[in-house]
Length: 471
Ligand code: GLU
Image (cartoon, helix red, strand yellow):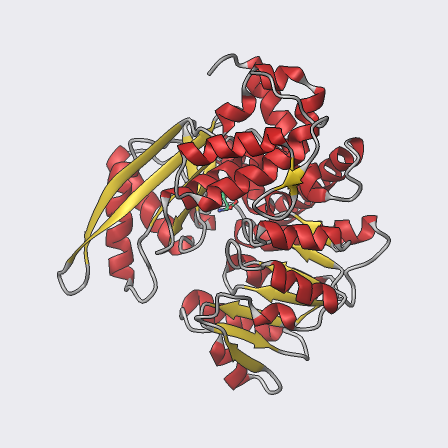
């Protein structure tokens, strides 16, 4: 049945925004088919709401059932991962790979190892990845995978045994022209090394099957830094387009993984002042700013010693540690006074209450380093209150973009220089920002870059799907 779009009076949605009958009905169907997957529904709803005018204008997307196809991953693989800990005890985890879309290229997206990993979480991430990867302009489709395995507190040997067991099954489903996984939360250089080593051993082939590899065995320079650097580049573009500058801005950053730490690094490079970082125990606030010297200390602590962020406050004068674990209502990190905020930890870490605190403190910009760190209500409140909002699928695309560049270097059996990769990353981030800004203004969304990101990427993927027929 054809639905009338736009001409239907909007009515309130579950998230407090307004939603037309078309969106409402579509989301209800997706919910019925995907029960108990709230993050997936949230990600779908966010995209569907903003592409409604595109569907209203182009009947071909509706006739070809593009949306119905996009919410159904091309393939979902789940498997048992059995491994033995250092004391000889056997553990059973669940492994997944969600191959969401191969319209624009081989499935591409990270692996997440974290106890909160469920099929719904990975489906949301894989869905986001389709659009994010489209924005990079590189030939990569969308996917995501991982496991509910918790690497925290595990020895290197235990992590290696888990990775090898995980790869025993995953290797059947991936390949440099099929599906190219990378890192995400809980999967960094160490895990990619173990996964790659085992793939090579099982298949007897050295190929670009994973990205985020070590730089002397097929990895790309700048891949580690790329997501964090790219996020700040996107924020700087947003500010510039609105007559402002990142220089001198006080910035809140959450998280203390790869994304957060390299966002802090780039903020320092561009003359801004990052004052917070966090982990699952709490956050540190340093009014003097987390400069490069302090950051180098944190990098050692977090990436090498796998220590806790609270140790920062015990080391640097004037800095304080605030415990937050167990607090699910709101995150007091977002109550600190600052000009800009960079949520770089995980999904739904900034809700409406947090957004209100930021607006009260005159925060001018929120740029998402993590995937969907703002709740629907949170993001909506920020946009309504004229805070410049950088959606994750655009702002954090620098990581997967350099993964795409790693794939290109692997195919050519070449390694580009640091400057070469950095210049390309900058160019890609600027292009992503321009696509978001242009699409938003074409459809009358002003400087709502979240709507722009959805429209620009959806159009690209949808056109490819139409070209490739009913698959
Ligand atoms: N996990 C990262 C992301 O969310 C990187 C994915 C990749 O490099 O394939 O985009």
